[in-house]
Image (cartoon, rainbow, N blue to C red; front, top):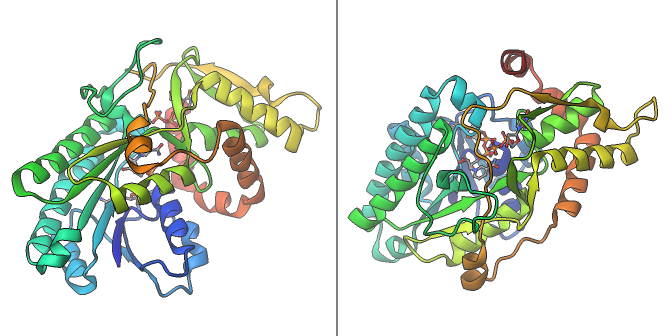
Length: 352
Ligand code: NAD
Ligand code: TYD
């Protein structure tokens, strides 16, 4: 088996579904705390699949993690669990420190203890895969070259600082203890099962519900967008063939301004579900106060993973965003499930 943490979240959930699509795949123990961002409805289709063992719990709970490792003897851990939303990290950084830094530390310590006791063969093949973000590298000037794996760490938000700290711990556990790790730093993901506090699902749902489409500042901030299925295939490639102690940047070669992303979503919705008054959804675009410390540009140089592991994204932004918009139109019951009271409180607090 493999142990996946945070597998009820956006990317972890997609990863679990994707992994178990293969009838010959190893089983998954899915450890997730089910914070506001965790959602078991994402995993509904696995209800009768005995290869999926869901455990509600915290990566920082050493007794629980040690017991799961002992019982299931996984050959790898893929660590998705994290607090992941920059805006929430600005309102309240404590959870980010607790899960992303202290939680990762505890998970590393438990995993190292388990790994130390494995027989030689199992010890050699064991992997700890840490899933991280391009945001650890900070912000790029408009024409600066994209982030490579050797770019210095310059995190600017509580979220990215906490992820940077976790990356450093993972690196140190390799260099100090020989613990077999790989780390991936990925750009902004989008796709099905994305919690609607993040830009793309928020804009799709606000649009069809007749609400404003909030763009921070001038909307000229640039992100590199990757379809979540491509992130999953990259993680599989690194887990299978990545070199120990290495980091791999994962990106979509899709740099877009926030404004152009929102305009593209509006155009697709104009076609798939036109507004009753025949006007474009772009009419709902509203410029709002900028995010404090807002990074201007992220861009990933994903040549290393292509050169060494032969991975490239399968989706372009045009194909991926169309699939994503269609998925939200086709899955109103999943959306209903996540847009609960707690979600409404967040929207009220953040967008006033
Ligand atoms: P998410 O917020 O959708 O999901 C996080 C999951 O982790 C949730 O299911 C939550 O319940 C769980 N969790 C939180 N704290 C936990 C704890 N202490 N113990 C166990 N489970 C806990 O996040 P996501 O967008 O799926 O991101 C997954 C990972 O990928 C994160 O590490 C994030 O930093 C990284 N990442 C995200 C993106 C992106 O664009 N979303 C890009 C690059 C990297
Ligand atoms: P987000 O999805 O929060 O991802 P991240 O901050 O991790 O990159 O935001 C993507 C971009 O969209 C980011 O530049 C902030 C911007 N944004 C808005 O303009 N309006 C919004 O309501 C949100 C949530 C984000």
